[in-house]
Length: 202
Ligand code: PRP
Image 1 (tube, rainbow, N blue to C red):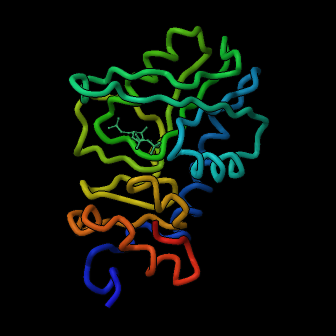
Image 2 (image 1 turned 30 degrees about the vertical axis):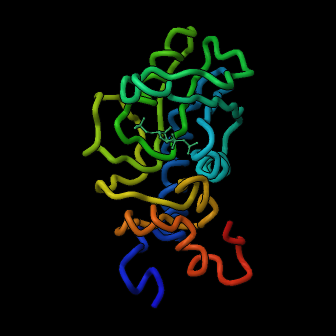
């Protein structure tokens, strides 16, 4: 009995649905990003790197990419939306069209922080795209110009999204129905997803 058959995990968004939706987003965003200045797409590490890689190839326009890495402050301020920048942008974003690329928006605290932070840098325009929107979990309202898929309040892995650092390289999005079982044994999906010669359990 695999983790799919016993209900631990189930397919939420297939590879094909991801490809189709990202192609649509690419066409829509390309139309909106045709200003004079070279637009810059900002990916927030690490989860959004996979979505960024596919999105830029669906955008048949001139653009640049840049990366930010942020971390929530530890104990005491969790959930406050106070974050620390671990790696900042390398590009000068002054007067440029900036698009924040996220894999998932959950409470909205991260995107809210990023939008506020970037809006102080005299950008030409500021928009955000997320592949997944878990709107039911929102703590702070946040503007989101483009949404790939609205999803229910379920833990998801794959296509950039991890559980304890693993499963980001699963090509589809899976919903974890039995999170307690996964927490108890984080490698429980490895065999079903990668086979015996896949990722070595550690
Ligand atoms: C995820 C995602 C967003 C954030 C959204 O990153 O990429 O940045 O959480 O959550 P929020 O709306 O509740 O703020 P995560 O912290 O999991 O880091 P990772 O991408 O490096 O795994």
